[in-house]
Amino acid sequence: MNGNWSLAARRNALTARAAIIQEIRRFFVEGGYLEVETPLRIPAPAPEAHIDAIPADGWFLQTSPELCMKRMLAAGYDRLFQVCRCWRAEERGRLHLSEFTMLEWYRANADYRDIMTDCEGLVRALAASLARGNAIRYRGNTIELAGEWERLTVREAFDRYSEISMEEALALDRFDEIMVESIEPKLGMERPTFIHDYPASRGALARLKADDSSVAERFELYIGGLELANAFSELNDPVEQRRRFEQEAALRGELRRQVYPLSEPFLAELATMPPSAGIALGVDRLVMVLLDAARIDDVVAFTPEEL
Amino acid sequence: MYTVADLRKGLKVTLDGDPYLVIAFDFAKPGKGQALYRTKLRNMITGVILDRTYRSGETFEPASLEERKMQFLYKEDDHYCFMDNQTYEQVHVSEAAMGDAKNYLTDNLPVSILLFREKAIGVDIPNFVNLRVTQTDPWAKGDTSGSDSKPATVETGYVLRVPPFIEEGELITIDTRTGEYSTRVKG
Image (cartoon, rainbow over all chains, first blue to last red; front, top):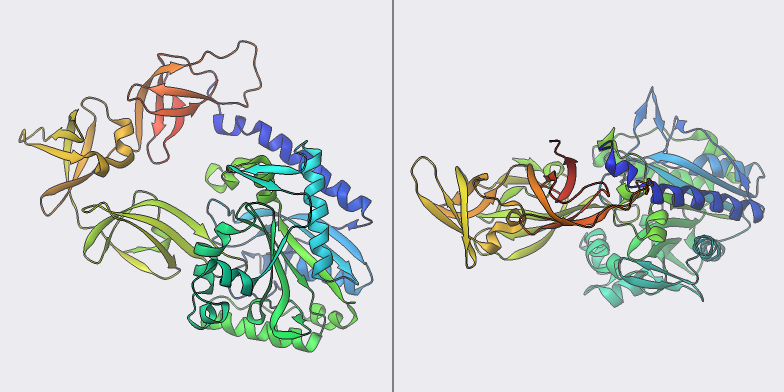
């Protein structure tokens, strides 16, 4: 009778999670997207200063399927999605698991604003499938899903919620702390928020904005203070992409982190990738928001501590 | 010396010479940014609460506290009284300094009293304590879903969620680090 009570107590959450993932697939298939499976173990993860891959038999467990999916865009597949496991070393907390489930989708001939529209459609469809109607309750807040969601630039977010500007925060090396302490808790509380146009230095795979090269066409989606997704208008200039990868790799070296080999096939094929946009969305956190769960632990079958 | 990897609720560290207790901890990583370790720390002498965010690589000195094994005797007004079984010396700890430990205190529970410059400023209790359920609603017979929990009150007055099969009068084990139900004690 005692058994594993905390696992048994997750039955409702795990049942809803399975239904949400089915509904995600239905949403994209109906939208003309091809579901793909790319290898989970890869030789060359994208170099990003603060994301560490877990080594696996000489290669690495993927931190994201991004590079393989963009190679498919370059090969002419114009609408793709994937639901898969990703791994990021030493990330564990209320909202983090080192092994987690990612949803990524990519569209040719689109930019990050089209992806925002996809996000609105997807989350509304999921809420409707759970009979949540036009609003969801998360941690005591009612979040309205109907109508256009809030779109706020990173610069505006600093002006509104922080005592210093985005430029000052970058100069003082306080950007991440202010994001976590002062800005994130305010985002997506009444309706979901897209916070967009990140400093150019913080979007290694994103295209810079045509009329303001100090910022990248990158957004993050927040609902109820939770960061759910990161999206770009994808950079498709191989020369600029190589320069950015080398810059990130050099930064990793300075931080005494493992420097990964560059994905040469990706860089070679990027030249044929049409203007595209794509997104990585954390499925576990999306389930948390839809089910009003406090911890990521509440929406997965096993945490590492339970194994 | 502790690193950010050691941070967890209940850790005691020294900041500016004073002992502090970590009362809340979370890992954060804002979109593609660096790992941040967010803490809420309570000054164990003044009770002042600080919010501090740390980065990878930062280190902490453990709080220099003396620990003495004692037993809980009784509560009076806003303080709790403990006795050293060897010397019969009694000490008082304020309700504020007790923190969550007050949810689990029963007569004669062995605890460690934490002293800083000879003054009792806190208490460490075992990670697991057994407490009797004094009130909980009966489980509807035939409900085999096993997927729900229900509230239960234990002998100290503390309320927590328990599995539906737990009945009044049963003894349960509680993890005092999380405040959550752990197992049912057989017999």
